[in-house]
Length: 122
Image 1 (cartoon, rainbow, N blue to C red):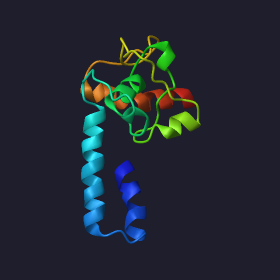
Image 2: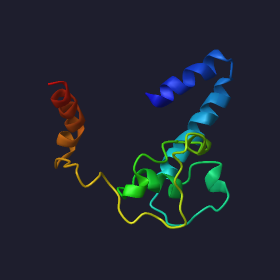
Image 3: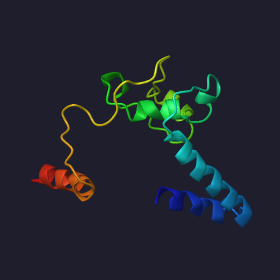
């Protein structure tokens, strides 16, 4: 849905289909790249474009990483809103916070946020 909504302005602004497809390919590879389980860093590049190192902190369950690194593509947004977190070491823990009990199983995990929303309304 995110990509679909992002393409609508490109089409209305008159970008050629070739440019739109090139963007689609680039952004798709970038999404795979930032989720890669690699430990190397990009010293200067990491502040221009989200890298695996930047995104690792987004998925970390360490307290220092909570509510950090929201930008999917450009870290400048996190710098502007003071949510950027990129220390000189990589996270040691990943996943949800210690207080969150995520259910086992694929379907249960998909339904879990919806059940939580229902409980909060009650």
